[in-house]
Image 1 (cartoon, one colour):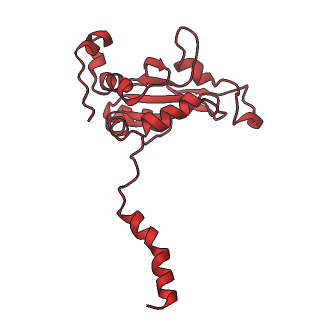
Image 2 (cartoon, helix red, strand yellow):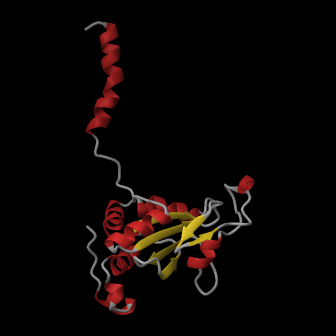
Image 3 (cartoon, helix red, strand yellow):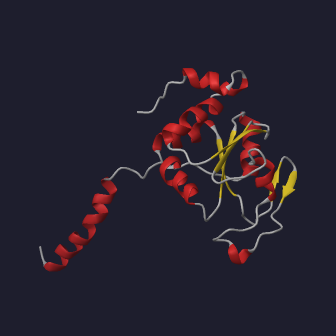
Length: 186
């Protein structure tokens, strides 16, 4: 083997090793609200909306530690229409036939605190206040079931996902469900 062939073989080695590595961690397949609502009306699945901001540390932790967890991501993808929504973004959003905007949005501040989007105030407040992250659970008709504020690890979010994703919320209160909940995490 000459030196040129050896060099090419050496350079190709990382590609061969990478090809044998397992696939990247499955991620949640996020979509926009209009697409999720249309799909939910056809198949009856609920919506899960991750209401986040660009500057929120716990939002980034939720994304990295919870939504990138393979079991959590797989459950969300199978049982919800997941939507990622920037609570301080500037894009207009149509929700249940009404257009919501962010009149206070400042494009020069898109990477920092900005005005709160009207949709955030319509779907995410708990006791009149918004916090980030907030996960909003909606039924297939686009009615808010509940917003849940704060960072959660996979073990904490699992019973909530199961409660809404399996449809148990239709005939049982969450405290009663939670008493008998058994984790399916491996």
